[in-house]
Image 1 (spheres, one colour):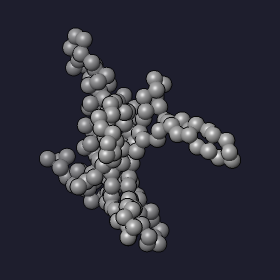
Image 2: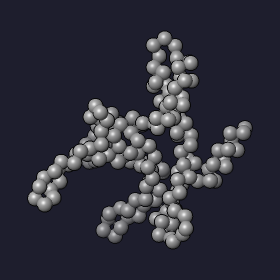
Image 3: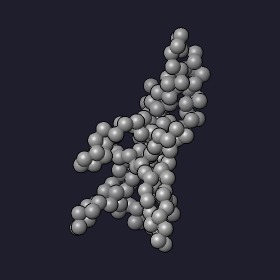
Length: 157
């Protein structure tokens, strides 16, 4: 624990009203599939063996290479941080870049590190039981105030 999986929408042929349609996968301009890294917050196995998962989206990713297909697909992926985070780290990366150093890659790595730092704050464990309660606030509020207090206290040290 925690459990993660990648959600990737692939092309498929769908027959509706006796007409075949191809649904496109979400891709970059070069055709590389883009997916979403998901974190499992809770799960329940049903009597018939199926699983019900309660998940939260963590990050986007780019499919780099499929490594296994059987018994299920496994792939190597590259995390894609928010462009705003990369831009925020770009100037600092250019300042420390030497010669032909890849400052864009350094900015992306710094953005991913910052994203990972805040991940515990942005992820809130919610159980399936919590999701069925009638409250005025969404059980999936995208932050955990207890983690934020811990991060703030540690930042002062």
